Image (tube, rainbow, N blue to C red; front, side, top):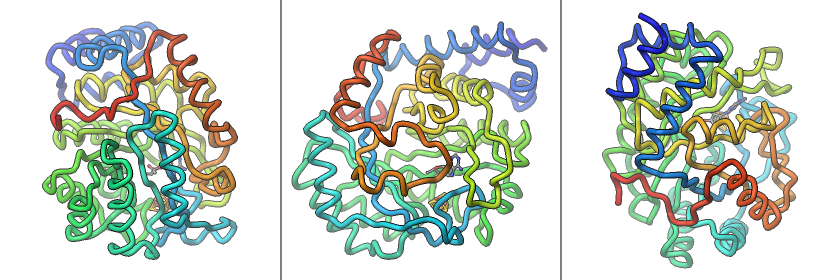
Length: 348
Ligand code: 5AD
Ligand code: SF4
């Protein structure tokens, strides 16, 4: 077994064995990382050419009933200053975003019981009424099948629910009181209801091994998500994981490129977390096969409060300026911002 052979076979078959993936992750070096990235880029271009899709992210609430060990807005963080947006404030963000060319709105928030099904259905249908041609993505955590169905029927198109880690023990260690099986059932429900469903995980979670990352990749190949969010773990000062190191740049890029080869058609964001650990993070992610970016449309007054990790990138950029900057920035390294809805090809 050698690294180059594994990369070529992954490229040819869009698949690999567990042993090969582990060997690849543990033995890749600077030279063959270039090969991996070139192959991931080539595979992305077959479906998506040089297009980078944009999604406007609206962070609707930082209240959360969960207590994930890694997250800055976990329930027990009494230092977090909490906010939630009203329907009218969410619509205002969407109007601003629509004017700037965003055709997807991502409503993301902590698991905040304030937003009952009735309130969410009203928000989703109001957005759909005003912006019938825009896609709505939800990222609101674990809900019942009935709630997911009600949101879908109200017009939600996509749902992001990272699986966080496919290793049951690690999952239950970092999510006090939660069950891995519940998470997986939610993902299955979302897919069955008809959402474009997004899974995903962090690279470099405290105590994560390379075998855990292999488990994540195998899970992705099996689950076949329409979208996949992968970014480095970044420590937050007011969490139990405050003293751990951040996930690495090269490791995250490697995992992103492998994901592109395993799932040629997946929508793969170059995440804000990746930009937050390195000023070139976004660019490197895109070059390695990412084809989505998710700029922030949350009200400027609240932005700092949606703090999942320390030193989050881009929070102070003004939206219109930032939108222009993205076009310039992305075209400088050979890609093109695409303003259409950007559905997964299997859902068009
Ligand atoms: N570092 C990186 N990513 C984080 N997330 C939450 N906390 C952190 C952190 N400290 C990610 C989780 C979650 C997504 C919304 O943000 O994977 O699913
Ligand atoms: Fe809540 Fe999500 Fe943070 Fe967990 S990761 S504490 S569910 S906002």
